[in-house]
Length: 121
Image (tube, rainbow, N blue to C red; front, top):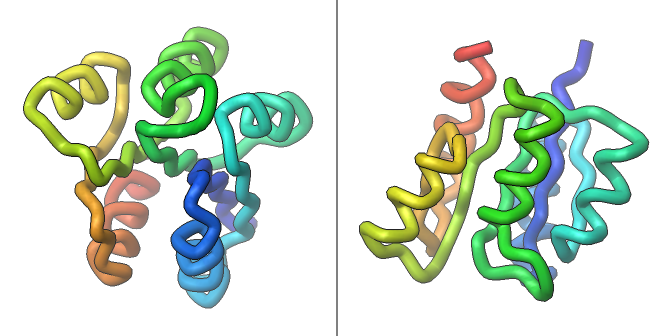
């Protein structure tokens, strides 16, 4: 069975770049430009992993993680951010993130992180 990823990122260029990288790796990939859109997508389909930016229009990536994990406590999530701080890293991990990656993203690093998180299932 093909593993499914949902990428929640409001920067379209990065979002499409990640989508291409992971599709080439054989994943089924959907994208959302906001947490609100992600909730709509998640209501219709399940994912093996969610990759979300912290800074999103409207609800933040950490709020998305917190709210969605209440309904799906085993959901795997990777948080990405350009605005890393010890505070955001701790907040992400406390909310249940499986990994925390700082932008700019390196594709090989992202592929390793995704594989590592998915292998934890």
